[in-house]
Image 1 (cartoon, rainbow, N blue to C red):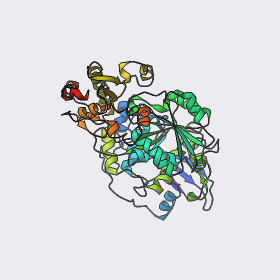
Image 2 (image 1 turned 180 degrees about the vertical axis):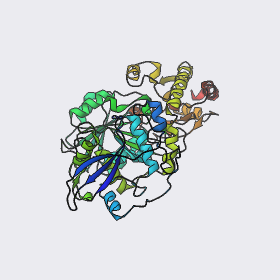
Image 3 (image 1 turned 135 degrees about the vertical axis):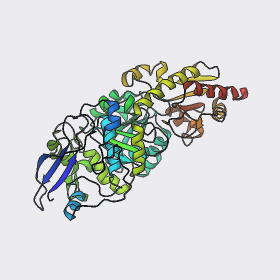
Image 4 (image 1 turned 90 degrees about the vertical axis):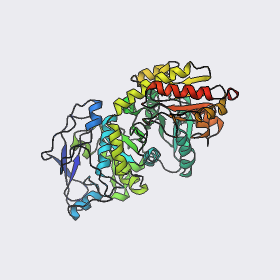
Length: 492
């Protein structure tokens, strides 16, 4: 490696450190070297304060004024590739000696800005943006899994995750055991020597159940495993899984983060303090990487490595998981986010606190209306009370989210009749939109599952899923009321 420069933003959990320029100096044909730090040149004002609150981070984190034009909003860099200063810089970037844009499949300045934002909001050390939430899950597990390896997952999951885990992962030789979300003994018993992770959703889709992240993290860590949490439904406004023991977070940014149903995207976010080398279970991260001439990614980029030491985070946090996801999985599988989508999602995230609170307030009103309606058999929403209320108060006291389910007394046919009768509310296979969306999981997202699997997931035949939007709550309730009135009595 030759002399090169690595620009490093301070990790969100260490916000007081100034932005740094890292010079890595090593003689040719030598893998060792020393690091020295130098302050970056004068930069434009209008940057995120070191001690910024959540709402301020939504606006400023990752969004520095453009150094060339001074543009306040992050520019959309619709370029497939980026010019190098010279062959030395090009070689350094390809050898991981310098971070910077090479090719949009691997990184892009617009994508980098939104990655920094989600890392700051989740309290992580680094993030990688992907084309969608499914891509984020695949990318995250590609860091950990080999043929014959195993995952333990809770069974309250989005239907697409069930099929991805149960079919596509099986095609790769990755096995998954689904356990009840409160069956902690069953989760412990399902762990084998080939298990590589425990997986759950923070607020489960479709049922809106809040999961006990601390108990799941304790089980995972007791066995030397990471806890991977899908935080799509909650968003970091409601739940911050790293604060409760999670090690990796995945998102479908298509949903609440973007918030407007106009852009597909996903994220993998790393906390940065998991020891990927201790157990020997994760060779992609701990063993020499042939793609980079024998570099050990965790040894170099982990919390005890030279990069963390130079950043002042040694023993606290590193970014080996994100580096591997970007320079191996993203490089080889190519599930990159479009810069335009990254821009739209970043703009959506600017209003995340305002939107999520309104979502939660509206949802509670709508759930209370349905709970009292004579044609409704049951309503599942943690904000209403019941057995899941204590976990809601512990993990997401600001609100229980915008997603919940309810069932009609007439079962499958009544459910279909209801979704065919709404006028303002949209029948859409999505959630987290600014508009209220309705779905009948048994005939839609969960239709490819068996009835037993649907029941385990909380998507029984009569189940209606509602993602409550930002309209006036009265208008949402009025539309549901007229749709319930229009549902034939015979169907009930």
